[in-house]
Length: 245
Ligand code: CA
Image 1 (cartoon, rainbow, N blue to C red):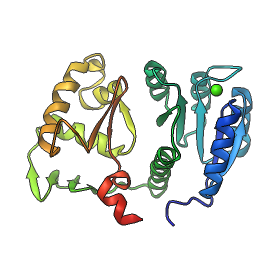
Image 2: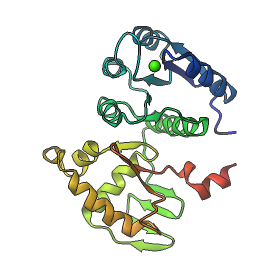
Image 3: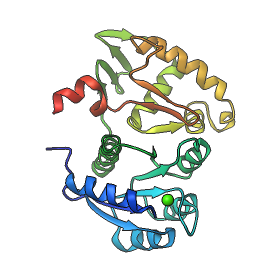
Image 4: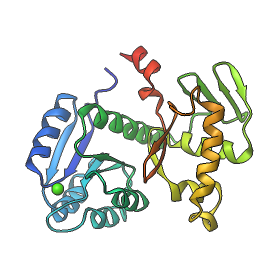
């Protein structure tokens, strides 16, 4: 099955033996090879030595902060990097994402959620390998044609303002991944506006009114409270998920 990843090596940098065991069992059952480091120093060493395809970094490590690990490892490691974080530590998650982490999982997390994140990571890897982006993105009944700048939902054309379109395509290019408020503000409005989250709220509300069947219960544009927004990945969209099983 395509969700298996026979040649993908993950490195987990985490000191909690329970999480080490849980991930070893779950990931090996899905065809991943898992390496484990219990300290930040060991993690940095193993990353350099073994060059894993994907890194999973816990933010609470015994010898150094997970944020320091991310900062140091990002000087040479460009692969997908997921962070494990405790609940209620939104500022840590934001800091990790702004330092170059790709996404996070909040403890406790389920294997389904982890596999979904890994699928997104693997796809971003594959896409950067072949060097080309898709010209058309389809998620559920939403279709975004980047070449013709046409957005269609449930066979109806959706008319977006230039800012709404840019917001949607920024999230779409990173679909499946969380994008922080700062990252979105920088990409859509420019570096001078990273401290203006109110823009984001206003435009996100407008965008949801146009593309969500029920804007109060969004299925495409998800809020990650205190962190940012995520455009759901097509593989995780309920209808399309059913057809791939
Ligand atoms: Ca830990």
